[in-house]
Amino acid sequence: MSNVKTRPLSTMTITKKCGIINYMEYSTGILVNSIGLIYIMIASYWDYRYKKIPNKLNFPIIIAGVVINYYLHGMVGLKLSVFGLLLGLGLLFVPFALGGVGAGDVKLLAGIGALKGPHFVFWVFLIFSLIYFVISIVYLLARGQLVKIIKNMIMSIYTRTPATGTIYDKSGSVSFPIGVVISLGCLVTEYVFRFHFFK
Image (cartoon, rainbow, N blue to C red):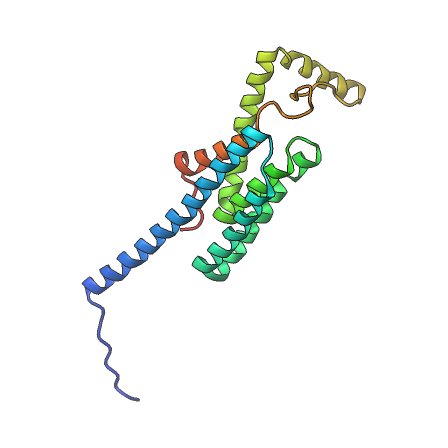
């Protein structure tokens, strides 16, 4: 056996290395969060102004989310980014199939999942659903439709027929942009509850 002397790491060396690692982790969070913030701001504007979120916004962000997390975190980042993307699509699949949300809203949540991972996008969905529920109740109360819809739901259960009455306006589109509510759920998740995934 050869006697190879290894110089122990000094406290200063360890501190410097930990400082570099912490700085890199902090910079990673800043990069992803900055992209995500710009993304939801633009998506909210488009949804509020034009009642849709275009593919030319969603698709580049989805691709960028996967690529960035692969570059920063390797295969682990790639797998979890793709899982977040698929989870974002899956969480809104049923509402989309029932006509409750648009395709742009689904892809918005998928983009958030690609950027921030499955843990984050799951909490965004839960908080978005809660906010959406509260807004819907307030909206229906303001229009005097809440009691009518509840009665219709009870009658539909009793008679086994589809319920009538929705929270849609006369044009058939949702009266408030869901993309804005998703973005609000994203902000609450990030800055109020601080559910991070990629460190």
